[in-house]
Image (cartoon, rainbow, N blue to C red):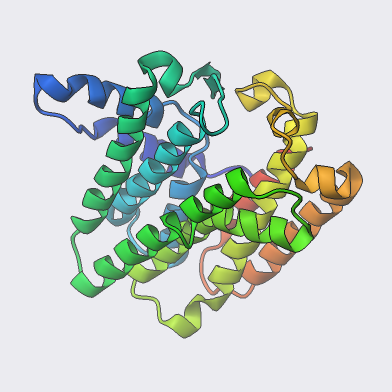
Length: 287
């Protein structure tokens, strides 16, 4: 089953159409924001949002702004993660990182701007006010202290993580934004809480799967395929699924998470093909 490139292409076209600045004084900031936002990739988070909409039988175009907001949040996190004070990376998707291209100050502001514009875009989505507000609340919560930013804090301060702590770290840093890519679509679609459970289990396992495979690829992948030098986790002395379990066991854990994600998805009543193909793509990145 192939990746849903039709959804990715819709995301790319929509992102290309977005402008952030209407005056010359801030045009350089817009250039930096769009430089990172339009750098490419599989757009996993916005594609998950649109794939969820597809599974619900909803018009895809009604979810494009939510999908775009999710990608803005994700891009903002990458811009800041790459900074010298964080992961200190010079390449992202085969291109100079934002701070290398534009300087640290502009990179910080570009990340800040992307997050602010993501919230503005979400809040302006047309439709039922309560549903829109829930989507905004979910995305903001998944980004904040109880989500991605909190996970990043743990990542830069913690030492000697055990298995449970590692899982918790990545459920916040990586998993929450993947989960909310599904949850926000469910909220905007007005799906009842009782009917969300299999989707939520699927998304939760997908977040775990993504990080395990990411850790494996940091050891086994090529610089060209990764778009940045491999081995960055080892250079920074980070605890990963590979350093904790070894490559073979990490691969087994990835298989178990993939199987659990698909099992949850099989409980969904709807068109699950696109959601399943995203899970398969994430899993097979290591193959």
